[in-house]
Amino acid sequence: MGSETQARVPVIDLSKLETLEAGTEAWGSTCKAMRVGLEEFGCFCVVFEEVSLELHNSFFGAVDELFQLPIETRIKNTSEKAYHGYFGRYSFLPLYESMAIENPTQLDAAQSFANLMWPAQGNNHFSETIQRFSTLMAKLDKIITRMVLESYGVTKQLIDTNIDSTANLLRFFKYRVPEEHETDVGLHAHTDLTFFSIIHQHLIGGLQIQSLDDQWIDLEPSGHCSFVVMAGDALMAWSNDRIRSCRHRVTMKAEETRYSAGMFSFKNGTISVPEELVDDANPLRYKPFNHFDFLTYDKAKGSKKFLYRIRDYCSI
Ligand SMILES: O=C(O)CCC(=O)C(=O)O
Ligand SMILES: [Fe+2]
Image 1 (cartoon, rainbow, N blue to C red):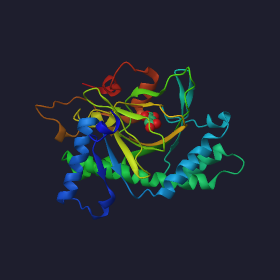
Image 2: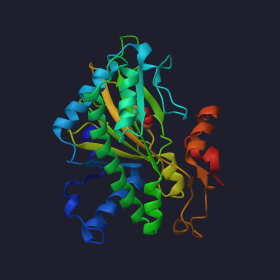
Image 3: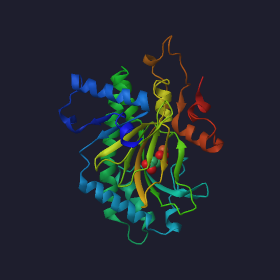
């Protein structure tokens, strides 16, 4: 199924972005391609050359170094926010482990994470690499948010407010190779609770997305500057169901440890469906909601039986 079906998920090259101007035909067609990808697959791929091969290599070198730390240290990655800390050591998910940094574009946040992980001397190389990579990821998230929201014809003020309210979380993932008797499920099928999730895979593929007609599509890593942009449940609600959050999973087929990373965006304040997205054919489907309260609710309730958990929280 792999490469044949993969071709259908749009691949959008943002390398020429500096020359793309808002209002031009090229800008409009790029916005539209993103919207089509999200409406048809819940995702699209982007090529973003600002991430150099050197940065990609340093970044995954830093991730590897992090996962070499003892487990007692790794589990110190905690957070007051739901779903913002260490994940792993679950019997139902034996291959998977992940850690996360809040506000990773701020050097002091990256440094305090490094101080927690390397208490004796910190790790400047680690925190600088994380901050450099995250800054570009956050830039990509902003560009995409602007272009996608614009494609729905909402006001510039609303787009700016949405972007200004963004809180970023950078998550690092490690999947070990299954033993002979073990499952190859790296991560079960789910949707993210984010606004956007931008996934960057290292050398080993395994990320699969489910199309609206229920086919699983492999999204292989295709270079140091390629990324998968997925819609999360919060974007689904914002869009009044024009976009479905992307159902995805990870399957471990390779004989090597798999690393990947995700830049997740959440929104501070209230998310509500813009009036431009409500009409007779599309009646309002979601009440206004607080993104972080949704995470807290979901964690407490564990409403895994819902395909789209946001519907359990605030659908009308
Ligand atoms: O490892 C990946 O590529 C994706 C991870 C993921 O889907 C998640 O943590 O929500
Ligand atoms: Fe996910």
